[in-house]
Picture (tube, rainbow, N blue to C red):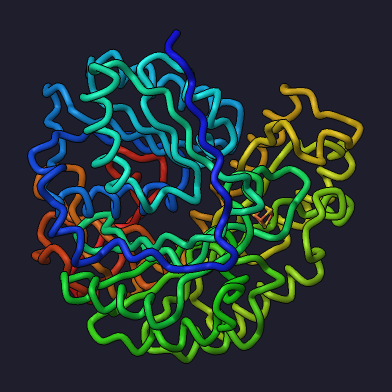
Length: 476
Ligand code: SF4
């Protein structure tokens, strides 16, 4: 085994923006020109947005994506550590890439990289592991390390880790990526100060920090100039926006709403205690914020919410849902729930189920609890057996299916605007209404990709290639 190099650097004393879209990138393009780069991303939308921005940056520097059957010069793995399974998938991805691309420079970044930098640096074929504080420096690191590997390591893997302790992570790396031709993901915030007992995110992503409103508006304007019509506002705990800049989430959405050319915004997920009445009122009266919310409830039992150290109770959550309905009666409300957390007794789960059943919500995203080293939840007695977890999860998924279909049925025969995107099937377009109903183009409906058209919604169907329901869009 080659020697393991590990560099721990001191953190900066205050937050700062690193602008990926910089002029100097073009000047320094030569070192990366012509490199074939293979990317692998695991985990959440934030990771995908970050990889996508990194890909854009490297392409601007003259690199290009490796084709399917090509041996890459550089492999970049953006990792996730949300569960044990996620860690395992990251290790598999690293092994697969090192086998598929022998001799490639392998760089690993992301949440798992921050938590296990030294361990990953020791894996066969891994050259460089970058922690969260360094993830905006990939291009610069590649220029330096590729040259030194050729000169000093004679092509052998470098096994180097560069990470600061999580408490010292300060940098906000901006990212505005295009998921497809129509929808952009704008990262406005990173990190979290909440420390829910089951969650490792604060350990991996660090304290809450954000971009400035001015820089985020500039990125939204850039997305509009590139033809983007819809922006999904993403982050780890976006309602907590403003720690680094003294601004507020409400100021941010007011400013974004004024960006010409962006016709739709969606807020990816916001903590219920941070979704103030002012934010709901603004969205209801705004030009471009869609009637669509995604709220992490996690449990409908107050006892379990206390064990989780969540910052609200079920009464507050129910009030938020009611307020949304009062001001936006057509709003789609998606809700995250975790089943089988430590301490979730059968009685607590039944309380939770009844509460969720009583809510006027449109869909549940059900996650099974996974034990994570270093979390406070491990001290809570009563671990839920896997079979029980599975059964609870199935009951909630069935409840979700009923609520989802009931929401869709309300709109059969109604006319709503749809933003059309590429479909999976040949020539078939699909899209979402303003209130997040999935729609597929009926064969006779002539619509253009990346256009917003009013359509009459008809007949429930299964979306092509997916488990989710959808409606057919017909002529009005
Ligand atoms: S709010 Fe809680 S669950 Fe969400 S990222 Fe922060 S600590 Fe994790």
